[in-house]
Image 1 (cartoon, one colour):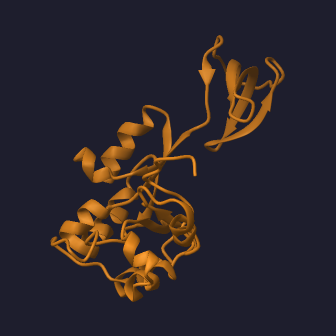
Image 2: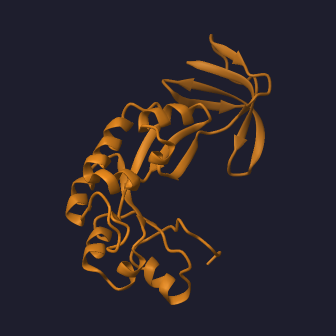
Length: 207
């Protein structure tokens, strides 16, 4: 067990810095107390250094970095990001489920935890022409994958609002769904939300 004394520990609930000591055992924080309250053999004096909980990047397209998930995770961890939730829709639009599978497979070598929201719109709309099509049937096999948390941003807003069969099938597969609904307000926004979509990548107003 390692003990770290004389830290300024950030409390994300109260947004305050608290003088503290803490211990780490097997990679996890075990005890938090007042400075000097935890004793042991291996003690590091942090001399007032600021310590924060690991940061979570709740939505990112790793492909935009031109890095593999494992390398992306290695680099962001150095800056305090311990968990990443990625939507691999960029590679999926080129390589389909092979691209998604590569991202999930390579992520296991990342020192940061990487989870995925599988892409809902490949292509983004029926009018788009890309390198692949990912159907609801294709997405079924990801529903039991522990690294997949849900369905990525649903960009096909008309498909949601008018009950497109393929869009509805995708929405029914996952309990957690990210949104992408620029400019929706009032009843149309309520209808969009009613389909189980709990966030919006394109918020333009508090509503």
